[in-house]
Image (spheres, rainbow, N blue to C red):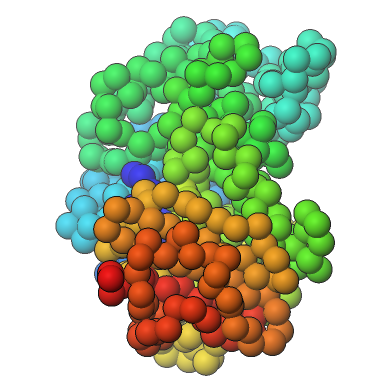
Length: 497
Ligand code: CA
């Protein structure tokens, strides 16, 4: 996976119920109950397979499903992050063969598959936790002790042992036993498990949950081992941090002061996520509003490879993007236009393409609601458009148009990025290769504007006309460019003199 890709992230229990016969499985501690926001809703692998064409036709090129491995826990088992068997797909999602077939089907449709994996912790119902092979298989405490969740201590030159121990060895949750990756048997178990899934299912990458919570040396060895065996295999680390400086440490980086190298090529870029929401919510100021976007990108010197940053409007742990923007459709389009044309690998969370809403503080069930059309009897079906309102239809078309155009536009994949300090609530940047140039104008003014191009001429590369990517209209005068109020304009330049 690389910056030519766009990832569709979906929560399997909440996307589509393609097989009602696995809604109830004897021996599993939790059964389907759609009335419970934190319960299982019945979505499964069959549902993903049934709608794989929808994902491919929207223009996505990679699929990341939240964990599908067995979570035989008494409650909240739907999200998949308390694994109770690393070798078995949860029977309420399907079988190991179903998963392998899904990967094959995805490949036929041109989609790469990223498997969500959790090595920091496992469900306390895992048989290896219930019957520990050795005491230090998991990090032990006298009484339940929670992590302080302060990843920053791991890179802090002044960190206390107290904080460090709590961070790395404290448990993520009462139901999640903290695995001790430093134990060589645990380490080997995890390495072999990754190799097994790569060989069995033919996956293209692993997204590693909560990467900095693990033993960083042991997991660096894990990543190096996998990359040596499979040089083109994708490893994406979840690095949930507020600052670019902290995040950059965890992307394989030969310039860390302590010489630590994670061996993780791709990491999540939460800083850019926050910047997008801030940029669209705040009034403009010296470092505020659209200038947030300028400032975040201006710090890319910190990264080993900024193109390998996963950028996203939201995900399964955050407020829904549309909710973060107070359901302002103009801002929705401005932010997506940015994320789909700036550097990095964009990731879109299922339902964001149809303006799904939800607030994280109400409970995670509210940001992981059922995708309309995924269940028999749904009155709204977003897969075929039935019952969507006008804004939802337009949002879906907008995302599809940008994604399908992005697929065949190398300038967006790896073209040089040139941007200009935002002025007068307008942010302008270019993506250019030797043969292609794309200009993006984000207009945050309520009013329509005419952009005087004298300031931006260096990005034009000698081109004299352009196609408006969203409307498909041709623009022949590049001296002054008209942009509607609160709108993005994406121009593919053409007509070399
Ligand atoms: Ca089902």
